[in-house]
Length: 491
Image (cartoon, rainbow, N blue to C red; front, side):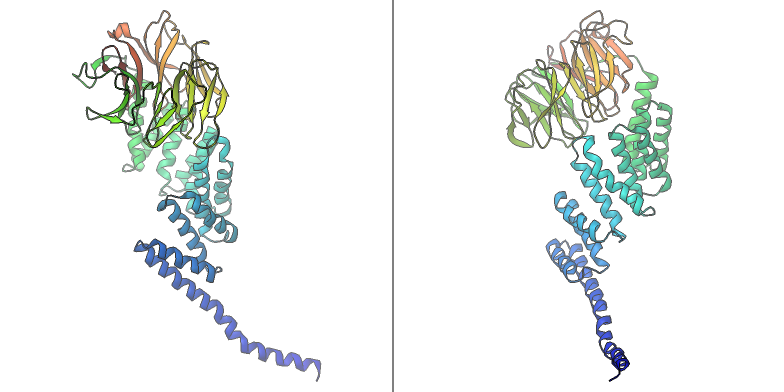
């Protein structure tokens, strides 16, 4: 048989199997769509286990279908939003990134993976992997809707790494390029915060006004309204502090030796009463016990998520955890602050260092002068008072001094010691001071360390023993008077 005759017969055989070959992908595609719809129906009915099993069948039977990346993204979101198990979402997101990087869903998957990695960070240096994912979204999917959120998240990471200029550009791009994006309002708020950090208060206020005009119903607009009122009062008007007397109004001799104050994230006042060895929450003029009995409490901390933390001689008592966390050799605690990374900073009057307790992992120390008081800053670091050096130190998240303020700077006279520190969400810092020619009183500083307002207790007509203070949401000061068993408010 001639050689060419064998080739003539081959196409006929191929034609016989071609319908089968063509039918297989079509059947896979049809099966994939039916499995996807079935899982979607179950998920809508909140039959989550059935949906997960159905979608797992889809991934096994038709991994090459266009529905596979959609399933991986939905399974990952389910773990984050419903199961509250972000670590369980990672395998789905890694497969989506590795096997389906060309799919439209990959942009959302990379974004979500970056957000989860950023949440795991415990210090700015831990953000590198998250930043890489945000950059991949921008590089690989420049026209995707996820880009606005990626710019917002990347800007926050650059801000946390001490690069406000780069952060500001990303925030501005996030809302200018996609004004209708969900990330636009948060980006405008973040831009305003950075402008304030850079010392450009007029531009900050204009950005806050733009946010209120563009997204008036958003939560960010509500914060912009609060922040605008506070900045105008504290930075521009700078009214003289005046004593409004006992607070809440008309209530005197109603406490049992209050010694410590803190402000909860929702604005409620938290206070520790020494005679009762308990912390209490003040809401609507009424006190309610908060957390366990804690004799010997030296510091009171309000966690961003709400629970109360008490530092005692025995260790750290957390309202949300029955176990007591030992604090090692720290026996003379002079203050504590919980930063927004979840790390607890503890100062000891006999230790020339700060001890940091992260949510996970071992404690570490940061070189520092001995601190008599400290408070968290919205930038992620803390401010400490070093009485021996007579300086306030504004520290970044790694414990490095960003701003150093001598005790007597911009004041008519110097003071010698700081009894307590407090800070608010806009970066103002209040110091309860004593000694020297200044005497006992309060000083309010801006984020750059400039004195905004100050007054002595003698001038305010206050004769009690003030041991703690907080800055309330309207820029007033709540003082804790242990001698007279009351609270005072300055405005």
